[in-house]
Image 1 (cartoon, helix red, strand yellow):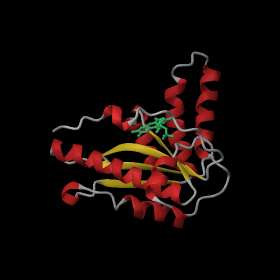
Image 2 (cartoon, helix red, strand yellow):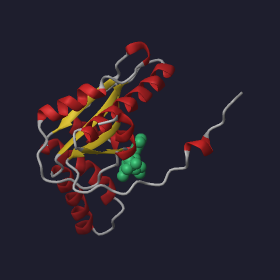
Image 3 (cartoon, helix red, strand yellow):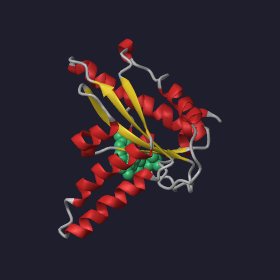
Length: 186
Ligand SMILES: Cc1cc2nc3c(=O)[nH]c(=O)nc-3n(C[C@H](O)[C@H](O)[C@H](O)COP(=O)(O)O)c2cc1C
C-alpha cells in the first residue's frame, strides 16, 4: 500500500469486528512504531499490550470517573460496568507511555517522538487491514488506570490505542486545506 494513500485513508475506528488480533500482528505494529524518528535516540516509548483482564480494569477506572457525574448509585454502577465491559470486549488494546527524562526539553521531544511512533503504528495497522483509535484524557494519570496497566513511577501514559478489524470506516472529517494554513516565508 502506498504510504500517501494510507495517510489519506486512515480513520479512527470506533467499531470492530470480533476477529481476534494475534500477537504476531501486534508485534509487527510495534516493530513499525519503534522505527519512529527520535532525537538523541532516547527511545522513550514503552508499550503495554492489554489482555481482557487489564482492559476491564482500565475500563472500570474510566467508568468510575464517568460514574461520578451520575447521582443515582445504581445508575452510576451501571455506567461503570458498561464502560468496563466495553473495554474487556475490545479485540485488542495498547497503552503507550514515555519514560520521563529530568530535562524538560528532552521530555518534550520524547512526547513528540512517542506520537510519531503512535502514528507509525496506526498507519501500519491500516496497511494490514486493521483499525486503531487513539484515546487520551485525565484517566491516563488516574492511579487506578495506572495500576490496571502496571505502569511504573517515572513513566507518563500518553495514549491508549484501541485496535481491531474495522466493522465500518467512518467518513473522513473535514480538514482545513494545508494551503490555507501555510505561510511560504521568503
Ligand atoms: C492526541 C490525540 C488524542 C485523541 N484522543 C481521543 C479521545 O480521547 N477520544 C476520542 O474519541 N478520540 C480521540 N482521538 C482521535 C481523534 O478524535 C481523531 O483522530 C479525529 O477525530 C480525526 O478523525 P480521524 O482520525 O478519523 O481522521 C485522539 C487523537 C489524537 C491525535
